[in-house]
Image (cartoon, rainbow, N blue to C red):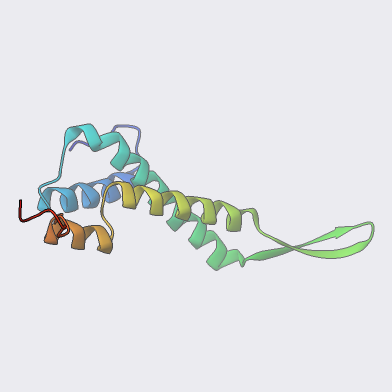
Length: 117
């Protein structure tokens, strides 16, 4: 798979790691490149938002007419959204542990009452 040109340097590194995993599992396909690129972008965003939250904290203080308020930083919601979408994309590309077990064992039909016929 070839990384799309619009990816940042970090996203291209993540893309390469994902492409290598798919190749090792013999599931690499050039048609998946945009999907893998989207996952790489989301994983890059997760890293960026986590870095901001580690430095700045999860909340910020603001003052209104009624007094002082403590609010969640916008990056908290953005991180949650990026993680949710990344998890969904990982599942679609079957790169999670449960998918690995399904691939390794193969799909086996359950025994049925009519198997003897």
